[in-house]
Image (tube, rainbow, N blue to C red; front, side, top):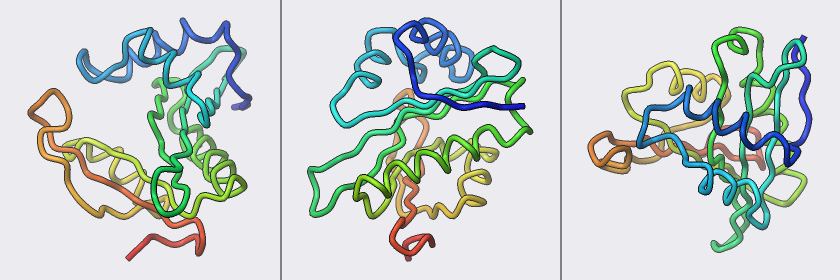
Length: 157
């Protein structure tokens, strides 16, 4: 059974190792960068465990720079042993609840345009592609910009 909780300081090394496994070099975060995102003001980190081991995590950040607060998924990392158990969906649902309760009207995230599994996962959760960021990953892979409205629970048109 998957359980979820909030980040603890002692999780950092494990989360960094998970990120290294989930993303290729140049896309994965360095320890310092990952710590910065986790400890940033208005950020939260959710951790998923299976059989007493961390198998996934999500970092979210509330951005207040626009006209209204926006939730931002910095990263969601799920190890193979956490996949197919609803782990990613559960982390995303908790993040959406967190953002909604903090007044965010929408959530934004990026995903590589060649990551069909991730794009299908986000579409299933109601995210809609609103743009493309050229050469976002490794200065050669485009990123799909995905958005979900929290006000209506439906994707933004």
